[in-house]
Image (cartoon, rainbow, N blue to C red; front, top):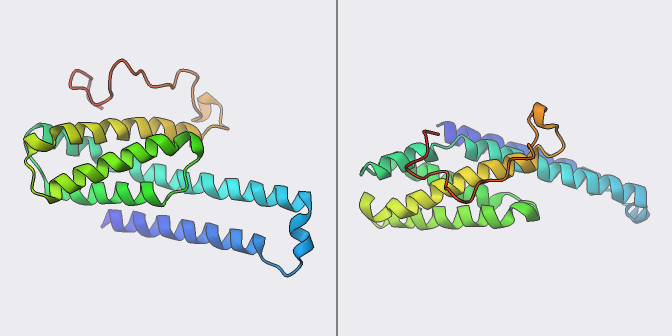
Length: 182
């Protein structure tokens, strides 16, 4: 039920953002859109709507139990309650207008989640989907860092903005078994 509420809230936020954008673009005076000041205001509003959309997506995806799902699969158990987790991640990743700097990582996360969902729907065993689950889990961690930094990029580090050392360490993976609990 909470996934449904999150989906409804995300949809409402996107609909409100679209309505605001449509209102800003409306009007019968075509010369108003050629004014550089009006175009700058429209560009600023468009950027703000995109960042709000990414913020909502980041919050939704960050709250999904992807870590628990992977822990369950690595332990040899497939729990059907994680299928909605994957579906939510797939839908939110696909429907969000990501900035160019996040597009590659969000596409990888989306694609890995689709492959895992297809494997689960095909009745694969936990042993058969372990690697797929690990890949989606790692993508989830990298997504959280990248999207969080993109959404909060204008904030100072001590107020929730990105730190200068926020680049993920590629020598180890976030979902590696030797890594401490997340």
